[in-house]
Length: 598
Ligand SMILES: Nc1ncnc2c1ncn2[C@@H]1O[C@H](COP(=O)(O)OP(=O)(O)O)[C@@H](O)[C@H]1O
Ligand SMILES: C=C(OP(=O)(O)O)C(=O)O
Ligand SMILES: [K+]
Ligand SMILES: [Mg+2]
Image 1 (cartoon, rainbow, N blue to C red):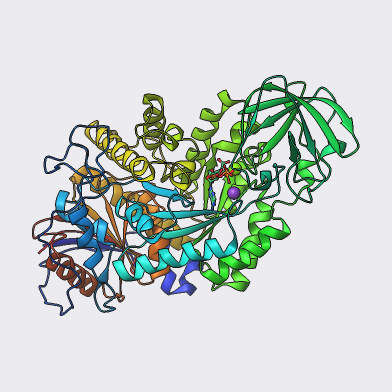
Image 2: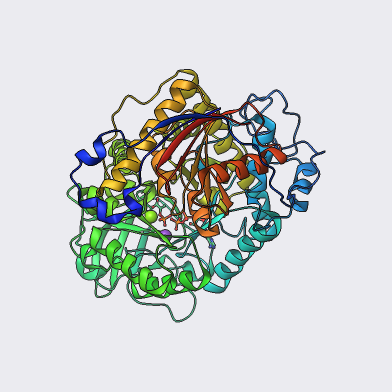
């Protein structure tokens, strides 16, 4: 039996849009009760043998057994993958255009644990020397990486191309849907690359020279080159120079032409291309910084590279205003097929906090880039800034990523600190869409374990939230601008509320652009959201959003046939079963239906 409400669709009859709202305010819909027709859909099976156990993502799952990459947080917490499971993934084949595509790991998780315990928080890994090999990337994908991030501050374009192609190959050959995010270098001030050395140690009381001169050969002793030509002019004797937001500190003691002599006051390791800020009388000096372009000429070349390689997201470093986001978006619209690359604004400067709402409104998502943010505002202000950014994004329906130092100690150690676990928990509790690893996965010693910690902590905190029945009481602001958008928004808000109140197993959303799926995600319902979309690129981008399990599926305007097809396909693959209660919404028909899977 299916109970449905269907709205007549102003979006498909645009001339109706000018009618007074009252036209639409009366019930446009009829509630119908009908038996769900059962039809069989022919399809080609995608799954490989199901004889091997599936990865169990839940910390407390009773089915967990020992695992080769077992981690830490719970005696029975599973590691990223068991070796026998990896072979399941390795033999899975996808792409039957008449069938359905979902990534192999999600499928295994759904079968093993049912819908309810599926992870809602998405995970991003920065790829670097520790994780750029095909097998290493596969281990991350199996461990739950939804998005691979490439930081254009490091590595050559050839290196990045290699990683992008490996990820694409993983997706094609092994059935993953890992999205790729390219992160621009931006043009803030940073140190040079230390002439090939991996680090340099600055000791207390040493005098170092920071210079705008480039070195011809090897780096002179205790000398650091600086990326920004105006540096020597801008600093003043007495200024404090912070490397990486204070990991190492110097005081400016003398200026000699292009050279600035500095006394080390807080010793530490200088890393290649580390960020530099200077402070005067307790405040960040940023007059000249503000003149630097947000997207440098090198960044534009990287962006062209990203377009050519078909990345899914471009994260823009040191965004100051909405203008640069709009500029990039129109550039992308002209160069790549419209809307195919999402633009993520990195909130990591004072200006970006000042102009937060307009920046987020212009973007397709935002990143709380706490590394540089913590170098620009006092550290104790970072948590409040994080909370505000997460809330603004939620209000405006943009995915938000919490990034940097989540598990910093795991660069060196196989287990996180308790404080790090608390930090990850807080980001999950704030219901951010995604968590990001930086050095932990790029160059750390335990990338897979770090990812497992993110996964297990996310699962545990999400479950805690559900057990406490903390349905959101915070009203979400209305954001739709057209009447059609408003209808979609109301449908999604209602669907999420009904899902919680009725305790349904999943919300199914049929969405061509992905917008309707994001509207359901925004409500953070208790159940997972199966998002069906027709294109592979939309499916990959949905990977960044909270609670969405994206499938690629060809579907039509006929909801009944879509539902039939979906149920049939998912049932045959053991992902749902008869009797499961689902709510289905669709953006073509603007409809909402409640039904048991036949
Ligand atoms: N593509 C890469 N090639 C080499 N090293 C990398 C790469 N990406 C990241 N790393 C290393 O991982 C560290 C942490 O990454 P991330 O936080 O993204 O960069 P940053 O420290 O520059 O902000 C970097 O400092 C760098 O040492
Ligand atoms: C994510 C960040 O940016 P990047 O690693 O590129 O400095 C950050 O500053 O926190
Ligand atoms: K960057
Ligand atoms: Mg940064």
